[in-house]
Amino acid sequence: MKALTKTDFNFPGQKSVYHGKVRDVYNINGEKLVMVATDRISAFDVVLPKGIPFKGQMLNQIAAKFLDATTDICPNWKTATPDPMVTVGVMCEGFPIEMIVRGYLCGSAWRTYKSGVREICGVKLPEGMKENQKFPEPIITPTTKAEIGEHDADISKEEILAQGLATPEEYAILEKYTMDLFKRGTEIAAERGLILVDTKYEFGKHNGTIYLMDEIHTPDSSRYFYTEGYQERFEKGEAQKQLSKEFVREWLMDNGFQGKEGQQVPEMTDEIVASISERYIELYEHITGEKFVKEDTSNIAARISKNVTTFLNE
Image (tube, rainbow, N blue to C red; front, side):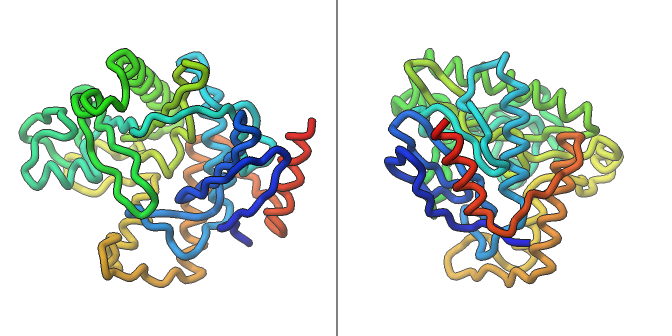
């Protein structure tokens, strides 16, 4: 099983390429974007040294399904998926913020709450909440979009407006889309015996219209709990059984790594890499309700190059 961790394509009409933490985005004629979901994996804003086989394919296919399932809520950037690891779409000018929506108190929000803080991103939180407890209503806790190697920073709606990162009218639309998308994601997850705990959305503008961009409802951008046993575990104060990238973060923390200066990423053995790949497949099958079909990985780059070039030349 091979993993694609670096890309260096030269597609027809290519103007530039942006290498993100896990995705590489190719600008075609300043009009289209070819987004390649690589097999890179990041945690604590650090790209880990080894790729995870099939991860890019899974994330791309999950995102494509959810983009298609939400077109009635808001326009999105996707126009085609010429390869299992590639989405082609319209070029948008992104808002420099990520809209994070949380239905439950967990992860970084819980760590902040546990330390005594009762306000996150300008949102006041009730007293007496426990880890993994459902909020009375989902809350939006935006972050800034950081450069690679930097950490995303919490930001409030008031700060976003004050800094001119979005106009009040734009922000109202972002907020509405975020809540409506989260509701839809929650409904789809519930049908599959899952709880959509929290997720993030990115938006941009194309010809003056706000579009949903990037991936949605994937294990890289979302956290899921299993519905079965949730209440029982919550009442006993036990850890929830979850489908997300959190297990990767937990493995890193157990081995003394949290992305802080001077810390070393623990060794990623073949067993660790294979187990992470299996967990991603488990999530794919749960969230889509479909069996995961592994694509041929003998020469991933050549396959992508051929499929995308054929598509762009059509």
